[in-house]
Image (tube, rainbow, N blue to C red; front, top):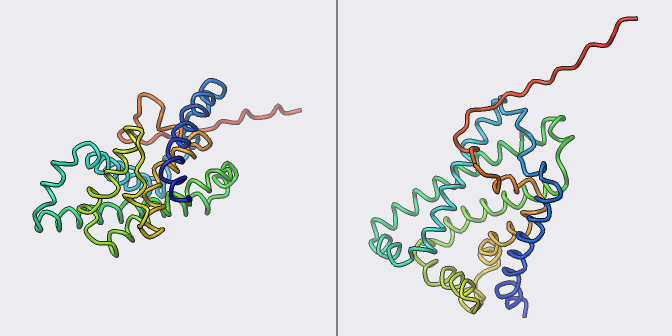
Length: 226
């Protein structure tokens, strides 16, 4: 029953939350559709954390999307052992690179009193979940080997079944919980999306990955002398 809810019902709840609450927040609190901390872009820790995290996670997400959309070409790509080895090593390296950046960003946010002052509880929840999602992905790559291959016979058919509104949780119901939660991660992020600063990824255009660092200076008007 739990597997049925998690893999047949929850994905649709998450998508509905993301759309309905996200649109409502945009209409009522449009200003909140931003990252809300660009005044610190000049900081060195932000640079060394933001670049590997953002570029790394985008590459990983695009790879996952490619597998879902172009499943047969992907099967051909990883069908040869040498290519499978290369894909696994490259994927693991990028994930570790992204995790390093995320850890730097978390340390920066928790170690800077100014950033802590503008960090909400939902920001902490989001950071912890992103840490789990990235870390569990690395764990799976290390201890549940050849995921680039077996995902095409498990998670991908499950995603496809959701897209045609005929969910088939049996594809993933026998997996260990670390795998189950990781595979649900995308939908959990969707559920968190409208309640966190993650909504800034829905702002168009999206210059966050290529724009130059921004420096914002605050000027306080001097008080009048008596």
